Image: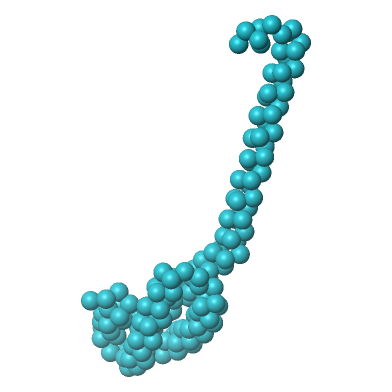
Length: 160
């Protein structure tokens, strides 16, 4: 370090300034490289992952609305109300099926495909129980529709 001490103060200041300037330029270059990586990740998230997430969220919403409609069918005492909820459920089912078609195009990972295949396989089994629930609700058979609503469909989707 003796050679640095022999410099004039102005030379020391210039060398120190250039050293700091070089460090800042290197850090800036490194940050630009890192920002391009972050930008690519955010683009992937915005164009691939987020639409799939929104679609699966809509599927969940429509299916939950369908389930609530089934419960309202069971709890309704008037035939007009039951028919209103049956119509509402058929509309929800159409929305659910159209959103399933959208989501099928957006799946990109094997885990998503596997989970969706399980859901798609169980859904028709679940939906097959609805006509029984509606028929018993229309006949106004006390609590029998409630037991149909709670037990078999839940086993289909959740498991024993």
